[in-house]
Image 1: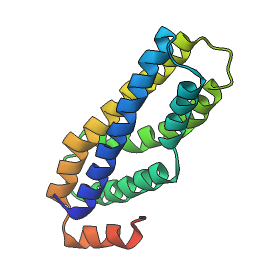
Image 2: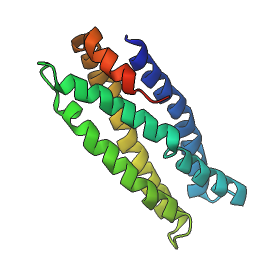
Image 3: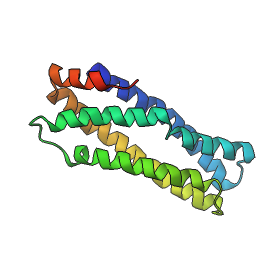
Image 4: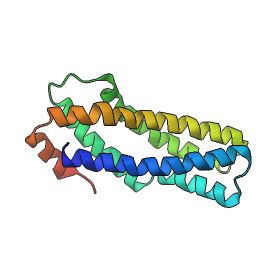
Amino acid sequence: MHPLLEELHSYHHDLCTSIAQLRKLLARFKDGSCDDAGRRELFELLASLHGDAEARHHRNEELIRLQLLATRAPLHQRVLEIERDHQGFARIAGQLAALEQSGHTPEEIASVVEDYLRHYHDHMDSEENIFFPMADEWLDDQHWQVVRQQWQH
């Protein structure tokens, strides 16, 4: 796998750790055993999923996706949907942050967050199993050079 794809993969791996922590907090949140500190941690973890690192990660994926679009690769529908997913996740970030001050019940909040996590996991799965392998197969050194020149760390 190309080193830049490995970097994206590593980010996904780290993100899965945060998502696992979120899921544990959500379980406590739903059953009422989550105290105020746990509630704050839940919303801090949610916010961390939409910080600068996430924005850079998505921009870097877009660099690769644009290069892939310039090839003759038989593009899978999920590759074509990645940009839309990224835009959707950026919009959802504000909605998730607003949940903290909403009047929603813990069960309602947990349901919204769980739905978001399901979509996010599906998105990562598509990238890992469809997009990254396609990019690795179809992009040549010239494509990777273009990506590397614009890559954000």
